[in-house]
Structures are given as C-alpha cells and as structure tokens.
Length: 321
Image (cartoon, rainbow, N blue to C red; front, side, top):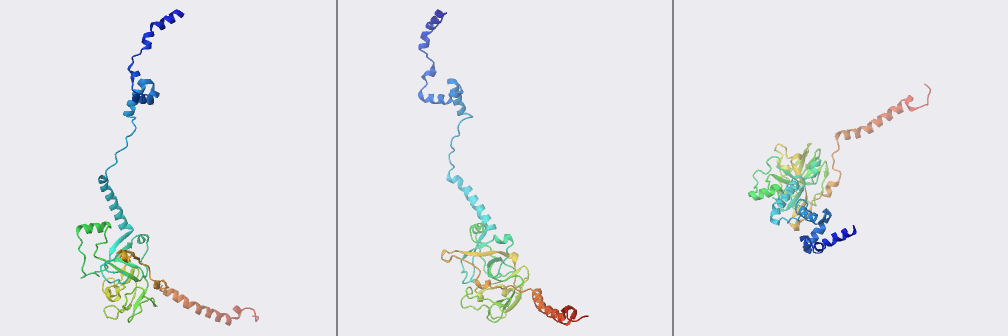
C-alpha cells in the first residue's frame, strides 16, 4: 500500500509541478475582481459575481446633473405658481394713480396690500388705508391705464402692480353704526367726537370742505358698509361726493380687497401705514338700548326708595299692626 501511494505520486509528479491553467496567469488587476467575488465559490464564482455586478446587481452609476437651461423652465413655472398663490391669498402690489391720498401716498407709489386677514373674517377698521373695487362708477370719466398683454399677464400673477383700473384707495373713517359728520371746515366728527387729523391730512387742507356738492354732511354708516375719505381732502372724490349713487356714498365691505400696510416703492419712500393715534380714542357709538337702560336705572332706584319709605310694612319694625 505504501509503494502504490508513492508510485502514484511520482507518476503524476511532472504535471503537478508545471500547471498550465490560464487562471494562474490572470493579471493583478483582474485578481482584485476575483478576490471580491470569491465568496461566491472560487475562480469561476468570481467571474459569475463580476457578471452579476455588471448586470442586475451593478452599483448605480452617478447620474449626470441636468443642465441649468433644462431646469430653468421648471424653476420659472414654480416661481409663477408661488407668485400667483401669494397674490391671491397673501399680499398684492398696487400702484397709486392719483394725488387723492397725499401726503400719505404720492402718485406713483407702490403699496403692498394685506389680503390674508379678510380670509379670516377681519373687516376694515377706522383709520386703515384700504384698497377697494369701484362701488358704483366712481372712476367714470377718469383716465384709465392701457397695459399691454405682457403687463396684464405679469399683473395677473402678481409680479407687477395691479393693472386693474377699477380699484381705489382711501382711508376708512366710519364703520357700521358710526355717525360721521362734517360741519363748516371741521373738525371731522365720528359719533360726536372730533378727530385730530393733522398727522395725515394734506398740509393746508381743512378736514371738511365747505361746498354744496357733498362736503357738508351727516351720515350714519349701515351694516356691511364703510365710509371712506382721501387724505387730500380738497382733491379727493370720495364717499362725500357719491351720495347720489346706489350705495349713497358708502363702500360695501365685500368690495374691499385688503388693507395697505407698506409703501414698498420707491425705496426712498419706504414706510409702513399704521392707524393714526386719533383713532385710538373710544369712538364707538353707544347703543340706544344701553342709553335707555342707563337713564332708567336711577329713576327705578329713586321710585323704589320712595315706596320703601312710605310703606310701614316694608320699612321694618316700628309700629304694631
């Protein structure tokens, strides 16, 4: 048995010492691949593993980034959609076409109008500067802008100030239930209380205008309406001068686009548009019922006291009955 074993080894000694398999002559660069794939079972497994990586199991190659010019239309589309949403629900720019709000606003100023708060039920308040749609041909006969198609498009999506020629901008003086009055040159009164308007009325103007066209008035604002006036009192065709229209000079709250909050252009004119201090005073109209109740209480107490004193049974122990 030992000789057979030795003979068998010596008989095959030549071929075992000089193997000519091509796998042994694989260059080092390929050996790296084979080593990485040797987990799949030897040399042949290494080739199979490499084929699999090149096919279904191949590591994903990094994608070549898209060129700027290919992505530009998408970016523009997103910007336009965002601008339209902002203009519809948040803020919108308006250009001032006249001098009726001097010196608060100058012709050519561009203001940003808050359109968000009305969506939550907020209504205009005294002292605010608001933009509103023409209630009933207030702008009849006034020159109107004639924007081109591009300007109309940019205005529609909110990238330019509104090209809508039927919008006006004024200051809210009275709200529902208020009594607003102008007598002589002023002062302007709301519910019998005088307003100090020196901070915003155009220098040299009087708060009220003496004329028979509407400058002298006393009105009560109905529910759902507001009374508006320009800060340039002698150069503003506001509620005073439209008392013959279907709304009698009042502006429906539903026509209000929003409150102007900022002068955004030109940069030298940048400023906010706060409510003047004169409107901080208590201008609310007392309800007739409340006034009647306040007047009745002393009378009732006086009558009760009189009856109590005159009635022995009510006035307490004293005389036997």
